[in-house]
Amino acid sequence: MDIGLFTYSQGKIGMNLKVDHCPGCGSIYQKNFRNMCSTCSMKMDRDLADCIDHLWKFPNVTTDELSEATQISVTSIYKFIKEGKIAKTYGRLTYPCECCGVSIRSNRLCGDCSQTFKEAAKQIKATLIRTPANVYNINK
Ligand SMILES: [Zn+2]
Ligand SMILES: [Zn+2]
Image (cartoon, rainbow, N blue to C red; front, side, top):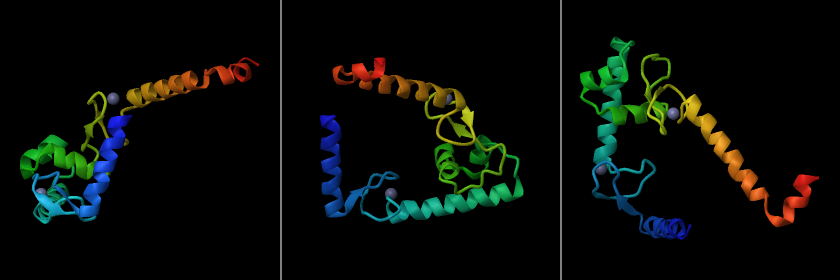
């Protein structure tokens, strides 16, 4: 919890200075709405255009095949799909569940994992409610 707060206040300082490390190449850049330096955002635009171009010609490729054909990393392609920059109509384009890595086409987690998460959240909630002040209300 303390660490979280610390990181948050650091982030605020970063925002005041309006510079940050680019997540793409690590160089210092002036903060902008795309959260990356201009070199990287230009490269991303080009990568995305290449992907869309390839998909136009080969709509049935998988994520791996697309990556191989365009020389764009699967990680970038996953990002494009998740951010909705590549239409979800391409049925063979998948990305891994953030929890177990199984191939999915929507949301951040597969069905199994989101179920597990829901159960865990329910349990946490139940534990939180079981404080002495509320015991009476629950048992009623
Ligand atoms: Zn960069
Ligand atoms: Zn999963």
